[in-house]
Length: 114
Image (cartoon, rainbow, N blue to C red; front, top):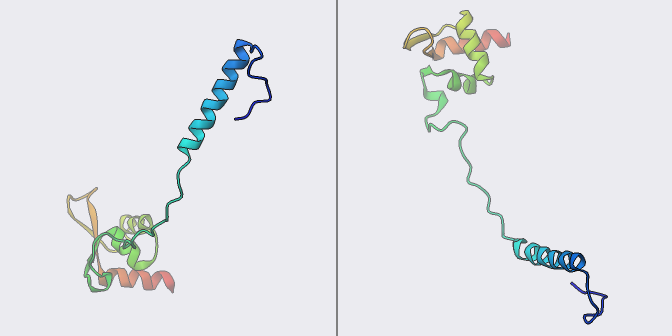
């Protein structure tokens, strides 16, 4: 930082403190500015963390059924609760996870699109 003031001229303490703070900030800003680094593309992640193909399954969870049907998971869960989509809760009864058979899901999707 350059100064227009003569270095031999007396300086007020407030002005000196302001100048020191400005110089310190300038040094910190230069030190903190990152050097540009090349960006590396993140590897592709599958939508569903499980590697199985949805086209080979017979039983689906609500998340898998939603991916298969092309709708939101909550839509599938509501259809299960209302009885619109035939499903069961074999693990835990009421409040448990829904299991939907492929045939029932195909029939529901076909009825929705018709």
